[in-house]
Every structure is written in structure tokens, then in C-alpha cells.
Length: 596
Image (cartoon, rainbow, N blue to C red; front, side):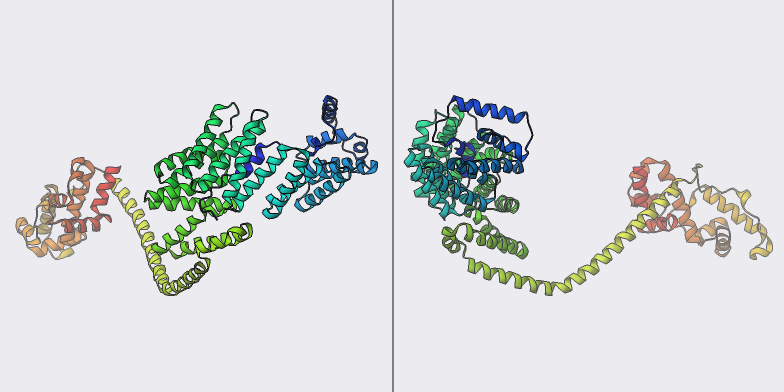
């Protein structure tokens, strides 16, 4: 296996750009102008009628049936009717060459195994007529179908047979078609790059001499240049690879036949070549230009190639994160495409080692499983490469490593069982706290709104003396005059905001009022329905709430400064009193005031 073999879909490109030599053209009579008019008439006739009745088809000429078959290339059921009609007509008239053509038509619209049988029949009936072109085409078509089924050995045998018949016919076109196809299999599918390169050079000379004759020859010429560049890169003959990459790109730039897709191949191949040279920044620049083309033309294998050489280049620049990123992109495209070549497997080896070092066993196991599944596919599709693949990637050791990882994961699950229970408990507690906090926020919001709805009458601590019910002798055991005098002094005390003075005590106020502390305490408890400390604190908090609502400047104060403004000795006592009075914290109240 050549670990640097870049798969740039040369096979698909050459098959796409080469106009196939149809069996309809391989008659022992040269096509002339008369036949051309017959085909044109048949084609126009087909456009004016959609009748596919069996009896009507049987009345059509061979040329009409051929034209009809060619026109409806996307309608297999209808094509079967035309092909059957052609074959039945040929058998009825016992025309072996026509029978061979009928079987060829059938081979084009049936599955692989039936198509092979029909192509076998083509060779049998062609040989009866001593026609050398039909076996050539039949063997070539058989080879193409076997190639598509990845039966490379049998495909090469059939290409060789096709070339042998082509030599009998002196058909250079088919000789080099067969050689080019064999070269592609040897280079892309069997890793025999040196043998393929010699065949590519032969094709390069042939198509170079004839590139001016037909567009398909020109396209085959440019595709062969690419194949040579790719082969040199795979053999690490990097200067030669760059030479042919530049040659192919210039050729495409200089011609009227634009092929952006193939141009993108040369750019990407040069990026891979620069990567192997160690010119990582140049490689990245080339891939930056090539990747959008690969995406535009849905070249998924070449997207894999782009991501792979991105990763190798970033690895060369010691950018681990980007290396991992692009190797993982290789895997993402592979998962969609369900196909990968041996060249791009190294990325999995890198990812396995990377996640092993990080201790991420599950990702390590994921990429290890993917690598082993790829190996099983490669053993089927790349039998010639299996031994070297096993040597490079040490599959038996990877299997043992897989078992170790699985065992380690089982142990981790056991040891983590208790942790998971604990985590579950923590999650439940966290959910409870979140729910509680949510409810608390709702309650805070309601309390804030209630505070904002209170009437702002200038001084919310004002008390009208007329509203205070007079105290009778038998109410509290205090002389009526003394009790009412204390009440009047409390009104004045509140109006003058004397409660804002720090270090107020019951004894201080009683002394100022000219009464005893017991009487003052009794009056406050009875008429204010709260103990002395709570009475003072509530007055202070009500004052501060009013000031904060009406004075934007105070909102900029610290909590400590506001506490001192209210007569509290410290911020903690103020915050506690504020919460008891309003149900919210002063910081929350100020924040909501600013927001609103």
C-alpha cells in the first residue's frame, strides 16, 4: 500500500469525459450520410409519437428502435420494450449481428449479473458474423462493470481481452482506453504505482498527439497529465509531481474547453504535494482554493482528501486542535460516503492516540472501532494491500487495546455508580434551589411593586393626631393626661424625624419626653402595636424607602452610607431591618428602582 496515494477520482473523471464508443457505431459498414438521415428521421418520428404498443414497436425499423431506445435513456421500463422489440425482430430474421446489438442494448438496462450474461451473448453472436469490433466492445463493457464491482483482477483480464481485439481492428482509440483503465486500477486500487506510471506515459503520448482532433481526446490528455502528477506524488517524486500539476493547470487555462472540476484536482494535488514537501502554509493555501470546488461538484472523496491534507499540514505546524478538527472532518464525510481508501486511514490512528492521551476512552473506542471496520472493508476491496496495512496499523494490538478500553469502561461504570448517585442528589438539590430562587424572585418582584404603589404624600411618616383615639383611665393604668401627652410627643418626634439620630434608646426618649420608660414602652406597644426597637427601625426604613423613590441621587450611595443616613450603626443591621419591613433586600430595591 502506498500511504500517500491521493484519491482524486481520476477513474470517474476519465469515464465522465470520454464519450463512450457505443456498439451502435461498431458496424462492419461505415456510417454514411444516408444512415445519418435515417437516424434523424427516426428521431423526429419518435418525438411525434408516444406509442409503445408491442405491435407498433414490432413494425418499426431497426434504426427507429435504436433512436427510440437512445431518446428515453432515463426510462428503463420503456427502454426494455424497445430493446426486446429489437432483439425479437433480429432473432425472427436470424440476423446474428443485429442479435448481438440487441443483447448489447439489454446489457445497458439490466443489473450487473444479467448485464454480464448479455455481454457474453454479444461476443458469441458477433463471432458468428466474424465481426471483430463487437467482441472488443463487449469485453470492454464487461471490464467496466467488473471494475465498478471492484473485481479488479477479472476487470483487468477483460480490459486485456478488449485491447487484444482492438489490436486486430487496429483501433488505437480502444487500445488506449483499455490501457488507461488498467493503469487507473493498478494505481488507485492495487497500489502498483510504478507499473501504472509507464502505462500513463504511453497514454499521455497518444492523447497528446491527437488532442486537437476531438474534445474527448483533449480531456483524456489533460486527465492523463493529472494521473501522472498524482502517480509521481504517490511515489514521493515531488518535483515531478509539481511539474505535471503546473503543466495540467496551464493547459486548462490556455484552452477554450473549461473544466473547473479538473482544474480543482490539480490545485488539490499540488496542495498535497506541498504538504509532503513540508511547505505546510503553501499546502493550506492550495487546499483553501480547491476545497470550495470539491464541495460545489459534490466530490466527497476529494473533500476527504482536502480535510486529510489540511490535518497533515496543521500537524506539521504543531496546531493540534486544527489537526484533530480536520481528521474528524475526514470521519464525518466517510460516515456519509461509506467509503474510504487506504491513504486516509492514518487519521484514525492519530485520533486514537490523541484521545488515549487525553483519557477520553469513549472517543478512543469510537475511532478504534471505526478503524477496525475500515480494515475489514479494505481486506475485501484491497486484498493486495491488506498485509502492509496490518503491519502499519498493527490490527491484533488494536483489538487487544479495544478489549482493554471496554474493560476499563466497565470498571469506570462500576466506580462511577456511587458518583452518579451523588451527582443525582446534587442535581436534585440544585433543582430545588433553582425553583426556590425563582419563587423568591417572583415574591421580591411583587413586594417591590407593592412598595412602588404606596402614596407619596411628601412624608410617609406623618401621623395626624386627630386620628389617635384618646386614652381612658382604665385602658392602661396611666393617667389620661400623661398618656395623651406622650402620644403628642411621639407625633412631634416622628414629624421632626428624630428617629434618624443614631444610638437612640428607650431611656433617652423617655427622658426627653419627661416621662418614665415604662409608660413610653406601654404607649408604643399599645398604639403602634410593636415593640420600641421595631417601631424605631420601621420609621427609619419607611423614611429611606420614600427618599430612595424620590431622590435619585441617594440611589448612588453605598448600603453603608444609606444605613448611616437612616441612623443605623452598620450596614448589616440596616439590611436586616429593611428586609423585615419590606420583605426584600435594599440592594434589590435600589437595583429595581434604577431599572424602572
